[in-house]
Image (tube, rainbow, N blue to C red):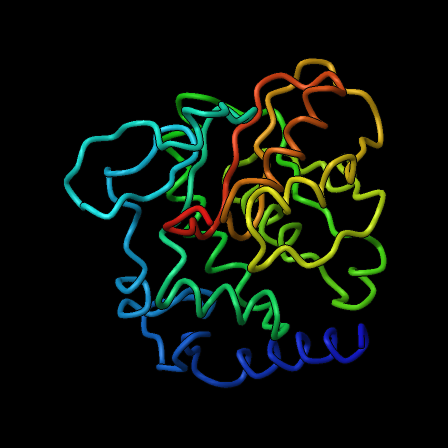
Length: 247
């Protein structure tokens, strides 16, 4: 499985070397690009989150022009992370792109998605400069099945674009957890309790935690608690997609 994915990645590189660059999502020929970006149409189909969202967890609200205020879950239980930045709402073209990147092994999407997320993160990084980028880890068993961690690939692209070091092994998943997709927040929190550990202690570093999607925030919260308990300073979260509703 690992060999086949690496072979696919190499073949994709060779094709892009000898053929005109095309959009990795719609295959439309690109002009004036280096072959590693999305076409203008696909980019425009991934609008940024509206200002109408929770300032803590970035939960998008239904109205596009409503005020920015804390959502009910953040009022009831303040998340341990300080803020969440997302490329956009987890729907439409962005959801399709993340699904292909995460489940279909289309690793060539790491660069365009990483570049777009880096653009969205620049205001945060100008005001709150992280010391480290930390990807949400996979358990070794899941990593062997998938052969790659999409959060790590994304963190590496962010590191290159934002000039921030990536601590790829700092946060580790020490026990396997069942798939979280479709589960309510209460069950997700229960499944993740004590699932993460640190490779080494921290000394007050500011951490930007990187993942592909945030739904209920259970994974980001448990990772953040582990980082803070291990000596980390403030923790913010960066994701590609932010789901519109808590379930």
